[in-house]
Length: 168
Image 1 (cartoon, rainbow, N blue to C red):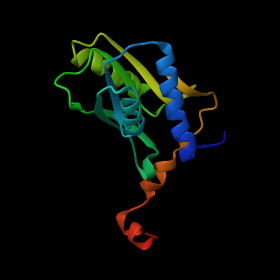
Image 2 (image 1 turned 90 degrees about the vertical axis):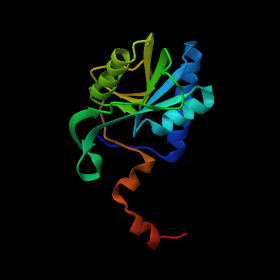
Image 3 (image 1 turned 45 degrees about the vertical axis):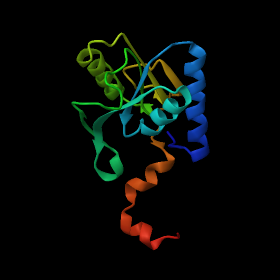
Image 4 (image 1 turned 120 degrees about the vertical axis):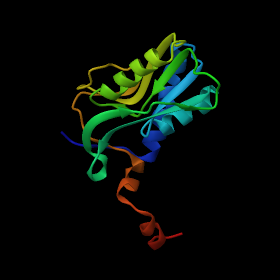
């Protein structure tokens, strides 16, 4: 199984394609919640396109060398948001659904902790066949379950001193 290498152009195009798919569905939502870190850029993009408030929930399930070792999932107790309350119809976004555990746990967390929640739908760029959940919206279905190399991952292996050595 070959790894999937994503360029910035691919990444930006896929964000726009995801927005088109959500829009074409006709579903009305009043809040976007992105899962940090992978869903931050996607949540920001969709929030701008749809002019819908963005909330951020942090999770951690990968660590170790270059963030490639899966461990126990931890979900933040609180959301970061600028609205007084979380919306009732939530679009939950992340970059990908691999095992599906993170997306499932966070979706259930939102439905349980925020009692006013009426509906949560999920959106990702990449949906892997090994996932225990199928997202409501996705750009790419990946039957071979490749490791995905996103364009910003170079920063996982970089420190601030290296920036001083580079151009600019």
